[in-house]
Image (tube, rainbow, N blue to C red; front, side):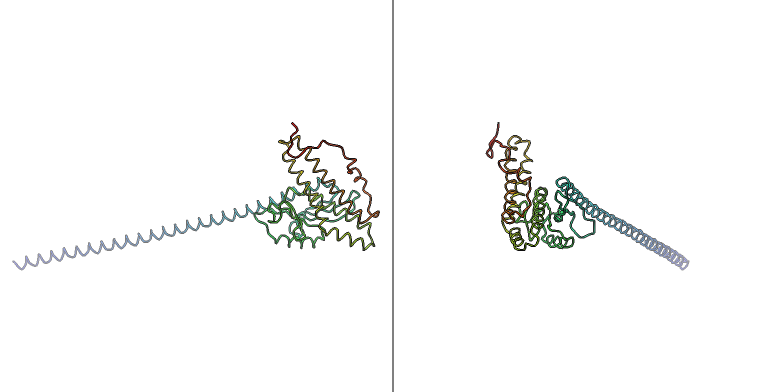
Length: 309
């Protein structure tokens, strides 16, 4: 009897142990399944994160590309607006001249000005290059000289919002005229006037090598440059005074008269220089007689800074 009870207890113990083992294996399988499922979910989540990051990077890249294109388009548009503006200024101030925009992709600056006298005779060519940047580059000079040779222009000009450190408003740098936007009209007037005068002298001096050499020395000398700068400086002063018109309305006319007198004096002086060289060979300009002091209307002089009221 005792043996039977002992066997029963053993059987019961073995059965309980098997049950425990089965439950343990079942728990381990469940844990394994949970871990595998967790890994699968984590992997899916990681792939989703990578996908979202990839989409975000693509969006950022597309946005940067769009921004770059917009900025490039904006700069191009600003350049085209500047070209149209200078074309309008030149056409308005010099109706006899032929003003041509240079086609995109074609060498030769931005605007081409074919200077003509009142008889329609071509007297030379001026090329204009517009720059609106944050810093000056000496490389523009070399590039514009190449363009000047390409189109066979007599004079080349760079108009820029950032001037070289050694130029305040306008000046000549390595054979290229450089000026700010306010000096366009005055600079164009001086340069085209010189081209017209030189053409007249050249026509009157055909076959006269000696006088041509004297004329070349004059045009290449400091005196001629000072004449040009005097004319441009006078017009620059006039532009500055016009900006103050609302505050100095009465005084403006007196100062403007002085500046106009300076332009007339420099113009007459330059004509006198050429006349002393060419003599009677220089073509008479009847309009210059009206600029002589005795033909100018008298005005009351007003000292700088003096008010009239």
